[in-house]
Image 1: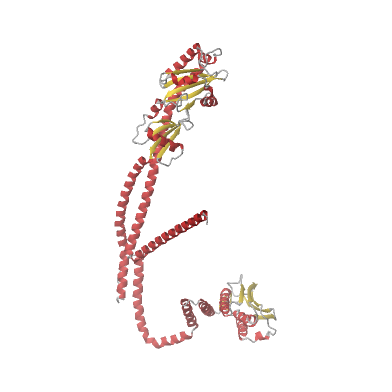
Image 2 (image 1 turned 90 degrees about the vertical axis):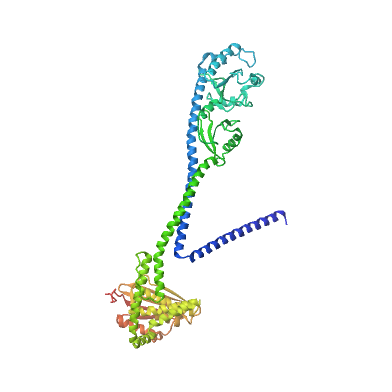
Length: 614
């Protein structure tokens, strides 16, 4: 056996074990539920009501408490997020206001003709990557005025399209850091130059000093492609380094009552995405990683707002557990209210269960007194459902007392009662009542075939009695035929098939017992002698004021139709039709050996009063 096969068998056995464990756990749970239900059923009704009310109250309170707690927790987080999104918007506007002044001053250089000429007019300069002395002086004066406009500007660098460079710094960064740009390195091949060209004069912001990205400092940069306003051609680039105190001003005034909330600026396109962070730097990496990876359902809750000027995202972050402390306080209040509700539920449940069970106790006491021999009830009951039951019981007992007195007086008519009993023994009602008893005995003994046969025979007798009426609906006559065929099929092992078609005439009345005898003849004389199954088809239809019934079988047929005329059952039907309907109505026969027999019955349509329709 290979290792893969062994592993597969192990996995299958493992799954089977887990399934069996689950089935056992479910079975054990169902068993506990059944034992609990049996225990509850053994309690008094008062205790059952008390138990049901307590369980209902506890479940309702628990569901309500959990729902309120979860809603409050989510609401606190959403409110915090909404509030701090607004704060971030305010901070972003502060950043925009500060940057807009710097940006506008930088753009004003493009209308300084001396500055523009100094950048472009350096064709005869033989000093490598340096501007000529006079141009350097002009450019230095222009960017010096620009830098002095705002104390947050740390330095400005100008690069023209020929690769000439001029650095201006307020002293924050030693000039040694910029020496590499005066060597053979071509500054115009830097990535930030490419991005600035694509921006076509719009300022491109970076969360670090683009000229010295490896230097950990407190400055941010923006790069601007200097476009000549007259000919729309690029003259070069301006790099402005700004002190990060600009960001401190935006976030430093926000006073809040949380210890773990922090603000940061994220430049997702930057190699240093964490432009700004005003908290513990040890947590910065973890927070930044969760935000950039989109893990906004973990340890931290984030709120964010996009700064349109820089394309940076202003973010507020707080640990969820600190907000959860507010939710826990609400949860404690909910738990306290829950226990108070339980105490009230116990009190009111007991109060109401006693009130509900009081009429039950009264009814129980009354029944007990009746069982001990009290035959006259004087107890008064209220108008509740239980009270109504008590009043009915009281009425029944008192009526039984009156009935008992009447029965005692009936002993004087004992001989008459004995005569009535003898009559009942020979009455058909007694017969089908006896059949009903046999039916239930067969059901108890699980003799289904016998039970069904007895039931069918009983139904036949009931339909035969027809409550003393000599007419019956076609529908009831059909039921009697079906019951009769059911009995015969049980005798003959389902050899006979019955087809009935009385559509449109089911509710019309005919005299009783005029179709069934011909069904019996068809079965005994036509189908019993036939090999295999046979069919009896009965159809009824109305033509004007007459009803036509045809009984057709596919039996062996009859050569001599006079045999049918001699039958007692046939003559009985014909005579009853003649006496009830008149001489013009009756029965006719058709038969062909080997094909079958057809019987046609013609009777008039009876009116609702039982008379012949005219």
